[in-house]
Length: 217
Image (cartoon, rainbow, N blue to C red; front, side, top):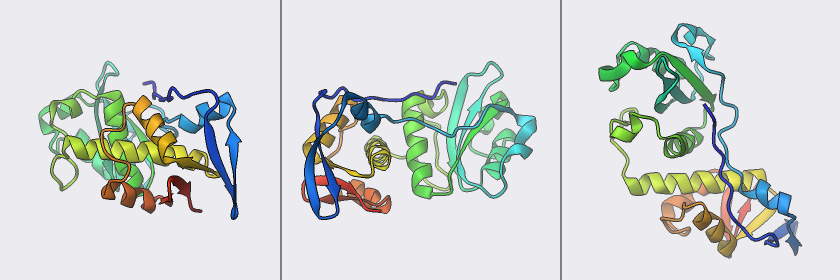
């Protein structure tokens, strides 16, 4: 499986604000820096394992998982606070995927114990990779209901901004610049000032300070 990355189409002479202590100065980003700024990808995904290799998964570790059929087609993406237990249940027909669980033969995992990161990684992966059964409205979170389209759009936007800011921790990105980047990546279906969006960004140490997004370490 190829993990996709998304790059915004932004001007070569994009101006960003670099903040050092109390001093702020305009910094003209080089073309290569712009590409780094907007790059988004699913990194640290494991190799593909057969169902017989479930013991390879780290014990009591959470993250997101990718399930494949015998031909290698991506069938389903999900998340869990305990990957080994959740995958065992999927492969043994003990979840809501029982009707098609016999199609699952291989899996990949991405480890993270952060519930916020699990959520945004999962939703981004579903949107980008379009697994067969997630797209057929059989997707269900553990112990929760199906999310609305608007909620998914918000979480995709959050994921995108988090990745940008964490890769460029010393760069404050203005509202106009962030809006342009998001629009170019078809991610601005909700307001950057949405309360839910801002609260989730704050959980990831990203704050809206005046007219700029800043990463507060």
